Structure formats: C-alpha cells, structure tokens
Picture (tube, rainbow, N blue to C red):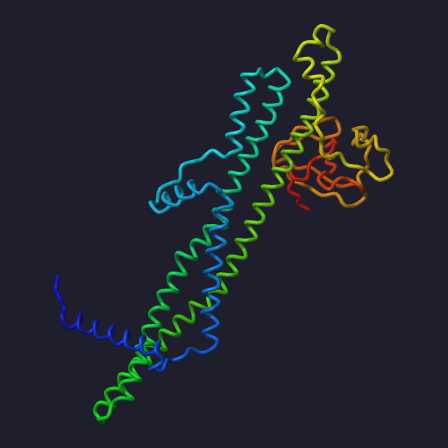
Length: 373
C-alpha cells in the first residue's frame, strides 16, 4: 500500500484551514457566508421532518410492541439481517390457557363451555392483532425507517460536504483580504473562483435533496392513511368478535338457567346445579336493529326478515369477507367470497344490514362485507 505524503499533507492543510475558519467564526473574528432565506427554511423543514419522524416511529413501535425486551430482540434480528421468530400474541396465549382449563374442568360443564367460547374469541382477537401488527409494520413503519436510514443519511452527508465547501470559501476570502503582493492576490483570486464554483455546485445538490422533503411528506401521508385503515379494520374486527361472543354467552346463560330449573329436586340442590341457577345474566350490547313504529318486541327477535320488503331504490351488491354463522332465524349465514344484495331500513342499527341471497333473507353484520356498488 503506497503512502502518499503529499496528499496527506494537503488533506492536513485543508483540515487545519477549516478548523481555523470555524474557530474564528465562533469567536466572531471572521466573516461567514450566509445562505439565502429559502435555503435556511429548507434546512429547518428537513430537520423538523427528521425529528418528528423519529418520534412517531419510536412511539408506533411501542404501540405495536409494548414489551421493551421484545423490541430490542427484534432490533437485533433486523440489524443481523435475520428473520424475526414468530411470537405468540397475548390473546392467543390466553386462548390456549382457557382451552386447557376447559378440558380440565370438563368441556361439557357450563364453565367449561364458556371458557371454550371465550378462548376461541381470544384466539381470533390475537390473530387479528398479529395481522394488524404485520400490516402496520410493512405499510407504515418500514417507509419511515427507510427515510431515516436512506434519504436522511444522504441529506446529512451532502450537508456536511456543503459545510466544508463553505468553510473553504470563507477561508479563501480571508486569504484574499490578507494578500498584499500582486502575485499573491492573483493566486488567491484564482483559488476563490474555484472554491466559489464548488460551493455553488454543492449548494444546488443539497437544495435539490432538501426540496425532495415535500415528496417524502406525500409518501408518509399515503402510509399514514394505510395505517389508519389497518387500525380501523382491526378494531372493527375486534368489535364484531366481541358482539358475537356476547350473543353466544347470552344464549348460554339462558340455557344454564333453564337446565337448572327443569332439573330434579335432588339435582337442583347439588353444587353444580346451584351454581348454574345463580349464574348472573351476562349483559349484552343491543345489536338487533330497531325499526321506527315497530313495538319493542322486534328487538327481542320477533321481526321476521322474510316479511321485510326491499326498498324501491338503495340496494347494493356486497362481497362477503369472512364466514358468518347465523345466531338465530333472523340472521343470514354467510360464506366468504360470495355475493349478496344488501339494503338498510329506517331505524336499523348502523352495524347491520338486511341481506338477500336468492330466496333467503336475514340480517348481516356490516363488518363482514365489502360494499361494491
């Protein structure tokens, strides 16, 4: 490996000149070339974008993974360019425990049946959470991280080069002022022209990169919309899962009490029967649509959807997103990817629609549908 003494000496001289110029500027003993106001605004905007992007990125990571140890583990796997191992969500782990407990207590007992139903819902919630975390990581976190590790590093590098070019330019101006002899002035003027050209060229390169921050904002805006859509779908799924669970628990509660009342006197005094008979009713969120002008018995399941007439206009086609098992005769069972006709009636709960498939008709949950037209 060759050792170039001249280049080393030249680099050392340039470094010393920049250090002297920087020190004198800080002490107020040297003039400094100021950038124009527009350029300064671009620099401030870029710094603001970088700072807030870092904060939003870090806090979103905390939202998606509250466990700091897990976040550190994921960070190390990412830096080592290795795939992060699949991690069981809290909901899925709770579902596993509830299912195992139900098997020990007896899956046929009231408590065991309820544990199985609740555990299944927790499993679905955990799967929905996993899907949301995956979607948010790809559509939101990755673009933010790419900006900080890619575009921003390039901008920072070019800004450092611009700072060095500016120090060289101001150092040349200082040498020109100090030059006395005509030959020294001529050499200083020639050097000043060269450094001015390099400074202008680097300033233009940096300006173009800083103006690209506007495109970064547009890209991050699109990613933010995708994040909100993923979060909306996640919470809508969770809400629907819990509504379904409440309806199932409501039916279980009535079944347990009915069984206890119809049991023999001896059985009614046994501990399991007493526990079932005294089981409190599970409060449910009213999800059955209420129609204006119809008595309250409609909300109790008296409404027969087959008697409902579709409106003259306002029907829409919809694609079913997930399988749905009808809870009673007023609802319509659904199969994923099938097409049905849907419409709403005055006074209906906004989370439900009337669905038609051939001669079949019944209430369907909106969150299970993709409205097409």
